Length: 198
Image (cartoon, rainbow, N blue to C red; front, side, top):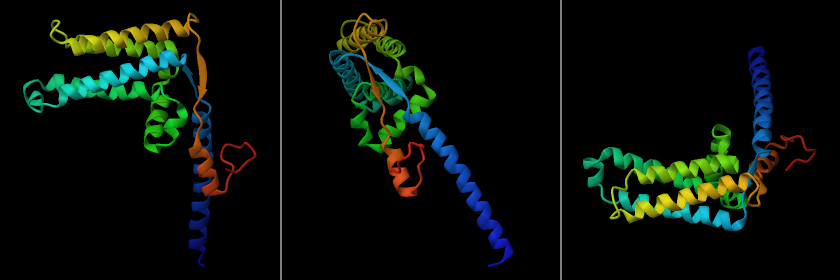
């Protein structure tokens, strides 16, 4: 083996060591995130609100002619669809999300860049915001779907704020990270430094 090849291998080893250290720090931070959740009834109402909002948005986007005639509304329906799915991510059991790595990764990205979603009161404000988005489409009582979606999300938002202030019970759900265990097993390295590989 030539001297240049040895230097390249040493450099690659150092780079991998540095990357492993950075990854373990990042995964350790994500692993320790708590998601504040309300009682099951509140979570169920939020899930129903998210599903209703999602269904309403998809129903409004079915007609592609709307994208040509009212492109801004169509874009708003896309945002509302994404927000509705985000609502579901923070209300379902974290164990369910671990089974779908892409969805769990999206939630991890949201936790990193939008940490307010892990706390009940700010998440309640997010639900109120979604409700107001639906109200922008309600020009009268003939848009009953939009009005119902707005009212339900606003109601759930207020309940989340009340739960955060202690008026309703709450619980803390740990976001368990199976990815750390899988990475430790694959690499044979104790990434999160808990004394166990895997």
